[in-house]
Length: 158
Image (tube, rainbow, N blue to C red):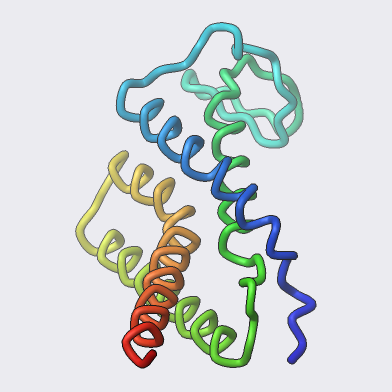
Protein backbone atom coordinates (compact mmCIF):
# COMPACT_ATOMS: atom_id res chain seq x y z
CA UNK A 1 0.00 0.00 0.00
CA UNK A 2 1.45 3.35 -1.04
CA UNK A 3 1.06 6.07 1.61
CA UNK A 4 3.75 8.47 0.44
CA UNK A 5 1.26 11.33 0.66
CA UNK A 6 0.92 10.94 4.44
CA UNK A 7 3.18 12.48 7.06
CA UNK A 8 5.02 10.28 9.57
CA UNK A 9 3.00 9.32 12.68
CA UNK A 10 5.03 11.58 15.02
CA UNK A 11 3.49 14.65 13.33
CA UNK A 12 0.05 13.76 14.72
CA UNK A 13 1.04 14.54 18.32
CA UNK A 14 2.76 17.78 17.30
CA UNK A 15 -0.33 18.73 15.29
CA UNK A 16 -2.66 18.16 18.26
CA UNK A 17 -0.32 20.16 20.48
CA UNK A 18 -0.77 23.23 18.27
CA UNK A 19 -4.25 22.62 16.80
CA UNK A 20 -6.36 22.66 19.95
CA UNK A 21 -4.84 25.76 21.62
CA UNK A 22 -4.73 27.77 18.39
CA UNK A 23 -8.34 26.89 17.52
CA UNK A 24 -9.52 27.86 21.02
CA UNK A 25 -7.49 31.09 20.98
CA UNK A 26 -8.79 31.84 17.48
CA UNK A 27 -12.40 31.48 18.62
CA UNK A 28 -11.62 33.62 21.66
CA UNK A 29 -10.18 36.40 19.49
CA UNK A 30 -13.23 36.36 17.23
CA UNK A 31 -15.84 36.25 20.00
CA UNK A 32 -14.20 38.91 22.18
CA UNK A 33 -12.57 40.90 19.34
CA UNK A 34 -9.23 40.60 21.11
CA UNK A 35 -6.09 41.84 19.35
CA UNK A 36 -2.97 42.62 21.41
CA UNK A 37 -1.31 45.88 20.42
CA UNK A 38 2.12 44.24 20.24
CA UNK A 39 1.00 42.48 17.04
CA UNK A 40 0.05 45.73 15.26
CA UNK A 41 2.59 45.89 12.42
CA UNK A 42 2.88 47.05 8.83
CA UNK A 43 2.48 44.13 6.46
CA UNK A 44 2.85 43.74 2.72
CA UNK A 45 -0.39 43.17 0.85
CA UNK A 46 -1.09 42.17 -2.73
CA UNK A 47 -4.61 43.61 -2.89
CA UNK A 48 -5.55 46.30 -0.39
CA UNK A 49 -8.99 47.85 -0.18
CA UNK A 50 -9.38 50.24 2.71
CA UNK A 51 -12.70 51.14 4.30
CA UNK A 52 -12.59 54.66 2.86
CA UNK A 53 -12.54 53.13 -0.61
CA UNK A 54 -8.87 53.41 -1.59
CA UNK A 55 -7.68 50.43 -3.62
CA UNK A 56 -4.07 49.39 -4.18
CA UNK A 57 -2.62 46.30 -5.77
CA UNK A 58 0.70 46.21 -3.91
CA UNK A 59 1.74 48.02 -0.78
CA UNK A 60 2.00 48.09 2.97
CA UNK A 61 -0.85 48.42 5.45
CA UNK A 62 -1.08 48.56 9.23
CA UNK A 63 -2.64 45.34 10.52
CA UNK A 64 -2.88 43.24 13.65
CA UNK A 65 -1.42 39.89 12.57
CA UNK A 66 -2.92 37.71 15.34
CA UNK A 67 -5.67 36.35 13.05
CA UNK A 68 -3.16 35.51 10.34
CA UNK A 69 -0.81 33.75 12.76
CA UNK A 70 -3.62 31.71 14.32
CA UNK A 71 -5.17 30.90 10.94
CA UNK A 72 -1.88 29.55 9.58
CA UNK A 73 -1.24 27.52 12.76
CA UNK A 74 -4.77 26.04 12.67
CA UNK A 75 -4.39 25.06 9.01
CA UNK A 76 -0.89 23.56 9.29
CA UNK A 77 -1.54 21.76 12.57
CA UNK A 78 -4.92 20.53 11.29
CA UNK A 79 -3.22 19.07 8.23
CA UNK A 80 -0.65 17.43 10.50
CA UNK A 81 -3.40 15.84 12.61
CA UNK A 82 -5.49 14.79 9.63
CA UNK A 83 -2.82 13.49 7.29
CA UNK A 84 -0.32 11.77 9.55
CA UNK A 85 -0.06 8.01 9.39
CA UNK A 86 -1.64 5.93 12.11
CA UNK A 87 0.58 3.57 14.11
CA UNK A 88 -0.78 0.76 11.98
CA UNK A 89 -1.69 2.10 8.55
CA UNK A 90 -3.42 -0.61 6.51
CA UNK A 91 -5.93 -0.75 3.67
CA UNK A 92 -8.91 -0.49 6.00
CA UNK A 93 -7.53 2.67 7.63
CA UNK A 94 -7.00 4.09 4.13
CA UNK A 95 -10.63 3.28 3.31
CA UNK A 96 -11.81 5.03 6.49
CA UNK A 97 -9.58 8.01 5.64
CA UNK A 98 -11.09 8.31 2.16
CA UNK A 99 -14.67 7.90 3.40
CA UNK A 100 -14.06 10.54 6.07
CA UNK A 101 -12.65 12.96 3.52
CA UNK A 102 -15.64 12.49 1.20
CA UNK A 103 -18.06 12.83 4.14
CA UNK A 104 -16.33 16.04 5.31
CA UNK A 105 -16.41 17.48 1.79
CA UNK A 106 -20.13 16.79 1.43
CA UNK A 107 -20.91 18.45 4.77
CA UNK A 108 -18.65 21.41 4.04
CA UNK A 109 -20.31 22.15 0.72
CA UNK A 110 -23.75 21.42 2.14
CA UNK A 111 -23.20 24.16 4.69
CA UNK A 112 -21.90 26.43 1.95
CA UNK A 113 -25.00 25.87 -0.20
CA UNK A 114 -27.25 26.64 2.78
CA UNK A 115 -25.22 29.79 3.44
CA UNK A 116 -25.65 30.90 -0.19
CA UNK A 117 -29.40 30.45 0.16
CA UNK A 118 -30.05 31.81 3.66
CA UNK A 119 -27.16 34.01 4.86
CA UNK A 120 -26.54 37.49 3.50
CA UNK A 121 -24.34 40.57 3.74
CA UNK A 122 -21.60 40.67 6.36
CA UNK A 123 -22.87 37.50 8.04
CA UNK A 124 -22.03 35.60 4.86
CA UNK A 125 -18.41 36.72 5.22
CA UNK A 126 -18.30 35.14 8.69
CA UNK A 127 -19.72 31.90 7.31
CA UNK A 128 -17.05 31.91 4.59
CA UNK A 129 -14.31 32.50 7.15
CA UNK A 130 -15.45 29.53 9.24
CA UNK A 131 -16.07 27.47 6.11
CA UNK A 132 -12.36 27.62 5.30
CA UNK A 133 -11.71 25.44 8.33
CA UNK A 134 -14.71 23.14 8.33
CA UNK A 135 -13.37 20.59 5.83
CA UNK A 136 -10.35 19.81 7.97
CA UNK A 137 -12.33 19.96 11.23
CA UNK A 138 -15.11 17.71 9.88
CA UNK A 139 -12.51 15.29 8.53
CA UNK A 140 -10.65 15.09 11.85
CA UNK A 141 -13.90 14.51 13.75
CA UNK A 142 -15.25 11.88 11.34
CA UNK A 143 -11.93 10.03 10.93
CA UNK A 144 -11.22 9.83 14.65
CA UNK A 145 -14.83 8.89 15.42
CA UNK A 146 -14.64 6.08 12.83
CA UNK A 147 -11.32 4.89 14.27
CA UNK A 148 -12.79 4.88 17.78
CA UNK A 149 -15.77 2.89 16.53
CA UNK A 150 -13.42 0.43 14.83
CA UNK A 151 -11.32 0.03 17.98
CA UNK A 152 -14.48 -0.49 20.05
CA UNK A 153 -15.65 -3.18 17.63
CA UNK A 154 -12.26 -4.91 17.72
CA UNK A 155 -12.28 -4.81 21.53
CA UNK A 156 -15.69 -6.50 21.62
CA UNK A 157 -14.48 -9.25 19.29
CA UNK A 158 -11.59 -10.08 21.60
